Image 1 (cartoon, rainbow, N blue to C red):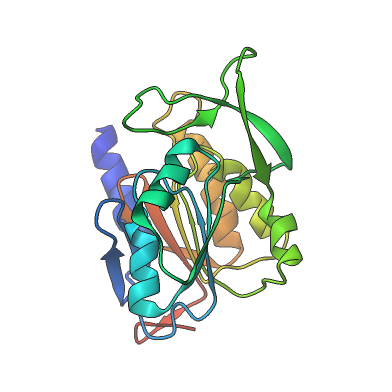
Image 2 (cartoon, rainbow, N blue to C red):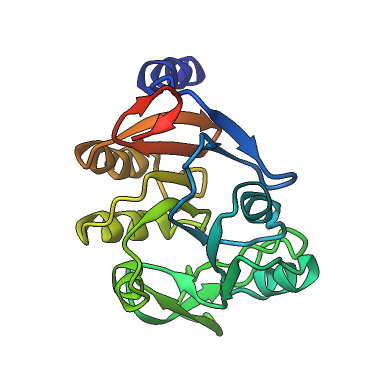
Length: 222
């Protein structure tokens, strides 16, 4: 029953949008790839074990990508995949606060995801930044795409970005309500402010959501 209800809600909420394509080889994401879709900056949170998505945006569309991941997993991936010109990598996490934040080590070493510390005895911390502070420092105002797969920090980062007045043309986000510390209700609470800010759900694949700001005309972002 719950699965049927979720499928029905997805059908009702997803607004048909032209020009959507799944990009990447391992870590793939739905994005609108219509002409002019990536004239601004791409802000990507989370490298994980694969950055083929970011590299394909650079290769095919000439995108300029700022990639954030403070973890040893992300750093090793960037070094291994040797990103081309057009990608700037920062060993920094995206969060709703500035400074060092405690993390737990991966539950599975091969999967490699570092998450917000669940206990008081965490022995690992990474530097983190708020996009609302970092973007003005870099004089960035036009964002074509904000893509975040950041292990629950999306619940802090999205409100921070929207409250600061930034409106990426596309937002691709994995919501982590499948993790015990986050509920599906928390995801709903994160989605509705996006709607209030002018976004519509353009595609959904499992926990990956694509929101597009404004309207879609002839497959082109306007």
